[in-house]
Length: 373
Image 1: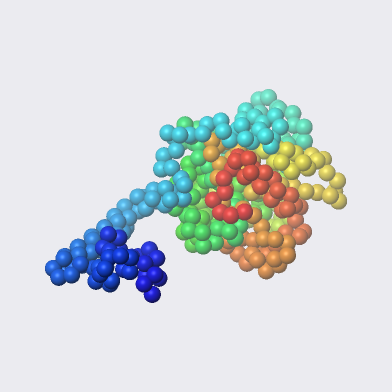
Image 2 (image 1 turned 90 degrees about the vertical axis):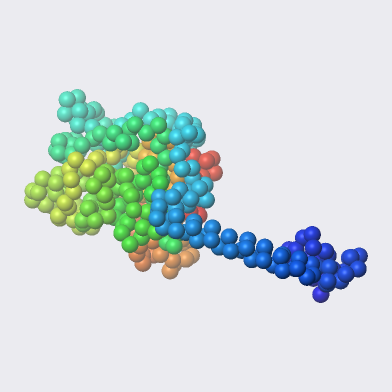
């Protein structure tokens, strides 16, 4: 028993070690008389001070919640203000290892001047180009906007996070950390309200297509959120133009009925440049730009969003990406609904192929994962 106690990390230091030549046995472990009382009172005093300090910290964070966010960011590896050590150019250098002819010269959003004053010829049809859909697109660009907000343009360092819809976000408690990024990109109709603790509450851009548009865009987005259309087909342009202009809707031509009423501010709507879809498909997934009707594969909105971030940001982090293994039939794929991998069987997405592409990005450090993959 003496040896067991001696090896315990809780044994006090400097007070004598029992059974090792002190000649005092257990009496040598503690001082006797008044010195014992002094030692115990000092020990109790330190404990009281520690409890008081912890209480004051808790009160401080409750009064100043922004300080709590800073502390969370510190413990999760995030800097409070990244501008002082912004890794400018690093993302581009690493992305160039995966993307041939990598360039940041392409505009993020389609611009009216390219289709009104001087028509820019497109090589591919949607979703990799606008060939054959220019007239419909022109109507959309006439009522929406094409500029990047000034608060993003003037950032010296764009720290971005792409928030996926995966079940890995469930119970992650990453909400405060996600909200600290400069640019927060979300996907489709993934909800925010009710999930703030895990996914945050702010949204800079939300990528969507008609079938994935939330029926009330004001519910899950802030007034400054950019609603970025990812056009897969010509009917997507027609849908945006009719719902924003409140004209007669067309119900056919969609794989699922999109919202017939979509009350969005046209000045917050953008059209994503198909260039990023082309890069995602051709460079990251090695998909042919012209596919047969029987064999069609397209990138997911999630992988597309990461490609966009690699061309826009100085730091790219991701969260909530990755699917369950094919053998796990019961695991849900989203953090907000009970849908399993079986629902992906009929889609035009190769999730295994995309997982390999993301893993390559992680391996070379082009992106960093806040969840597990």
